[in-house]
Length: 404
Image 1 (cartoon, rainbow, N blue to C red):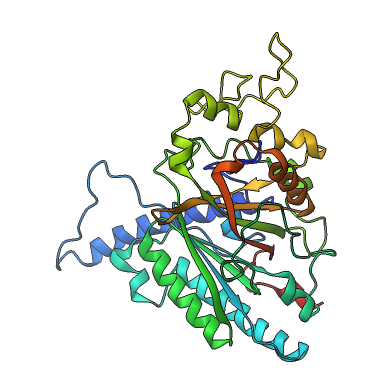
Image 2 (cartoon, one colour):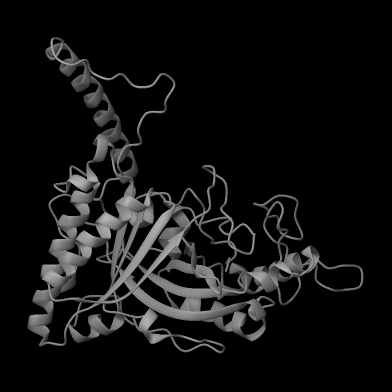
């Protein structure tokens, strides 16, 4: 459910300093080169079949999202409408054999994910010459990091149990987590197949998979969750993210930790509440997304405002109040959640939040488990915590720093 105010928004964090500008220049150069190449091709082939001109007024095709960079594209690019999370386990082995298997897998995934952006050797990703809009991120679970003595942040460990959890072990955890996101289900399906094949080649076995989606949303507009509320009002800017999301300077400075929770939502029961009760439970108005103390979506919630009778305007049990950064010394998460719909009685939220210290999530979730007004409508059914690797600049491989 929405966490204030670090929810995911359609335009998310920038890439590492300098990377965004380089990507813009590369994209501009690619567009220019494509235009020149098309013109030359038409001149050379004037006596062959005519070149089909672009439809007048049609928008130019979107440039592919680069795979290589200081940070993984699944964290720096705007969220794409379809996602799939794939978890794998490596076989139990000696530390030396396990490290070799992991190195083989990360090398294969680096090659596979980079090729998916293009140019891809797979003809299914070259249909009509359109660029694939695709992002990815790769992370490691605490169990694997401990077994293989990998260079991960100190204290990286499983989350503690929370009151009210109904977790299915078969739907959570895992040695490795791969999140693939795309603008279309076709690209997602093909890349998931290729990545799974690469994992099998390194001896990894599938553990669980989960698909998710976003509603149709205009650029710059906050998407809604299946309760009908805007879910992603504000993310930390780059300065705040350096403090709360990305690791400290050093080998982990472009890495982070993902907390994943599969949260089943009783949408029918929530929809049966009067609109005013829904707003009080959330602490925001469903219509415009504004906090109950404000007039616009981006207004900061005033947790101290009271009615004349002394009651808080934003109730003490509202989701907004219990997840506010003020209760955690200003700490913020980067939210990039998705909805899911697996069956008539099984739909909800794929909570994906990124932070330097997963202890932040533990504090927030303990408060929510104790008194959140949304608890009657929510059930946490799966969980994972993952160390998300730094990106792979050109010429490098994901996880190069793990062997130190």
